[in-house]
Image (cartoon, rainbow, N blue to C red; front, side, top):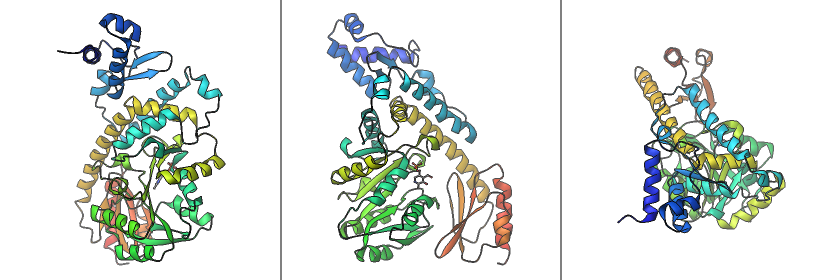
Length: 422
Ligand SMILES: Cc1ncc(COP(=O)(O)O)c(C=O)c1O
């Protein structure tokens, strides 16, 4: 027999499916529903919680429950081109910003004083993290003004009493390198190539006893686009544990990984990994929101540093992002992102397969990266394509061609340049 609680859930889901309810529509009040179903208000509340958990409705404080995703919203598979895609998260987000500004005077006019972030966003973020297989307690989370703020704070933290240096991959995210150079912080580098890193070299660096943390971008590395295989991931964690080194996992491209690689954080059993997630690449750069997952004992120190450089992270944006995640827009846009990237990658792969490059290369949906011996990049290669970019590494240099309408012509130019003697 169906319970009252199940009946309410079923009826509302059916109402959505049959299009009696549309997105944004307010549901009857708890009192009305309890009269209609002849049950207690608690039973109705339980049904609302279930629907909320299923991301079908959302609650507006002191107002009631509203429909989040109607059937059209769920079914629609949008045919996208890259320019449209940028528009899509922006428009959805605008709706959420609008929502955040309605009837929210309390939190807008009284400072919230919660360095770790808006409670609602912490809850949404905590839930979202499980989709990347990042499992933690809510009180391990801190919302930051983009990953950049988290990275900066980590450069300020002592972390251990005896170790001063930071280990970074070379090449790496240029802003991280900039952070270290501008503050004249001591750091070492370890070469990362298209085939990964030398684990003996990593052990040597860790064994030196100078490294407090290893900053790494395990998946969809910036700038190479590669992802560590699971043996390398395991080895990094094992060495980190053996030599008492923290690992900062910058997972800025988590939403772009259709292979859903497990993060280091998931594989870590010893609280070695500090996990950072940016919302910038998935949404838009102006959002300036990110989040960090810290071991409990580092949280207080992190928050103390954060309180020196900001008050509350932008509350309107935090509220809007929380709505954006809770009402399924984040998941929907990530799905579309994968669709788009898949089509792009197939197209690129097809074009690249027509050439026999004599060098190792790596393809992501956005970029072709060729690994070249030092000295190979001459003027022809440098200036022969419209949008080619050069990355300087330690043993190799890299030539990158981004996806564009001109990708086919750029490939031709690249091939001709590579055939010429250097
Ligand atoms: C490696 C890496 N981390 C983080 C970010 C994003 O940082 P933020 O969240 O500060 O915008 C980027 C952006 O390009 C990046 O390449």
